[in-house]
View 1 (cartoon, rainbow, N blue to C red):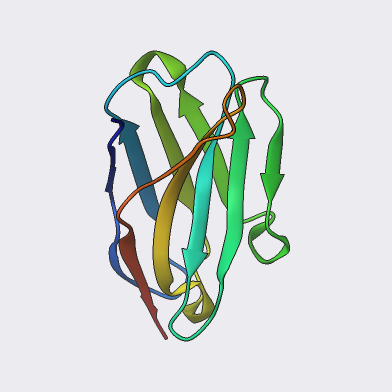
View 2: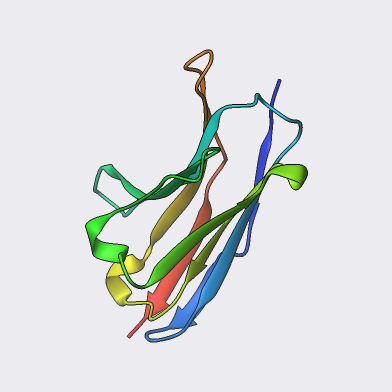
Length: 117
């Protein structure tokens, strides 16, 4: 069983920054996509950013230029650097890892990010 442990959420003023971290309890496979999705109250879960083990990144349109995803494969950890935060970034942020060999998806428990205006 794999556990994803997220940290770094919290309350920040508009224009501020936060850094999220997500550590997997073990190495999943040699080919993964790691990333973040978010879900605002009453809305669907949307892509924030992902990064594959090959280095390919993908960002949601609303965060391009403001958020940066990085991963440390040796630590089984993915990071999300969030800058120039806006109130509309308020959501629960979920860590996500997809094993490309098995097509199994793993999700974290979520961490709340609240941006005040």
